[in-house]
Every structure is written in structure tokens, then in C-alpha cells.
Image 1 (cartoon, rainbow, N blue to C red):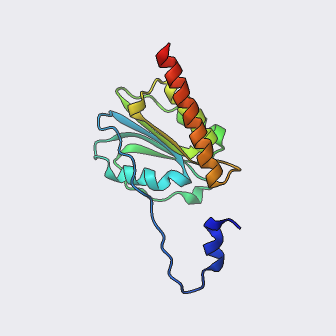
Image 2: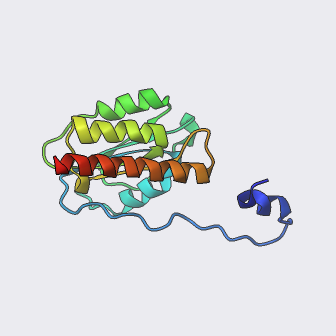
Length: 172
């Protein structure tokens, strides 16, 4: 049994446990014209936190991948943000997010989901759409078939490769 779950096997009925909510979220770049959020259920707390703090004039789209239609919840959000609850495979989700109606002005793109899907969407928005680093937040919150520690190691390797590519491109 892994040490992260040992407590669950040992806790007794009636004992108090501490559950912490989402940590602080990285702020959005303040000079966006519109927003695009994309994530799965693991990112829902962060998406909800961002939506709650947006000005009423904010516009854009929030795509949330869910396993079942019953997983939709009410979210506080500006009227100009369209919520898209999608029961979809990773490929279908990526296609629907990629096919979003592109608005005028500077977008801020926020993505948090499974590692492989994150890499696909990151490449699309960086390469195909040319979103600058300051206007793109991309993170994976988990990786299919991998433990949390393995996922963290995968993220470190992925970041090292990205940084190496950036360095080689800027040197040439």
C-alpha cells in the first residue's frame, strides 16, 4: 500500500481529518480580450475559481470534460462566458476545444487536464494559434496509468525537453 493512502485504511469512524481545497491559482494575464478554459474534472475547482473572479464584462468559452451529464454543476460566471460540458473522449474533447470560434483580440488560454491531452492542446495553441507564453497557461494534473510521483517525473522531463527546444531555437 502506498503511503499516500495508508491513512485511509487506518482512519476510524468519528475521527476528524483535514481536507484542503485547491491551492492558490496562477492569475490570468490582465490584458486579455477574451478567455478560453479547457479542462477535465480535476481542473474544475481551478476553473470555477477563475470564473468567479472574472469581471462581468469577460467573454469566452469554458470547455469541461466530464464522464457523465450528471456531473455538471452550477458555476458562477459572467454572462459572456459560454460553458460547454462535454461527455467526450480525449480526442473528441481536443477537437471541440480546437474548433472553438476564434474571437477578435488577444486571448488568454488556460488548460489543465490529463498529461497526453495537455501536450496535444499545448502544441495546438502554441504552434497552430501562436499563443504567446504570457497568454497561455498549460498544466497536466494527472497522467493515465501513472502514479502521482511518476506523473511529476514525467512533467519534469517534459519541461526539460521544452526548455531545451526553446534554448536551441533562440540560439540559432
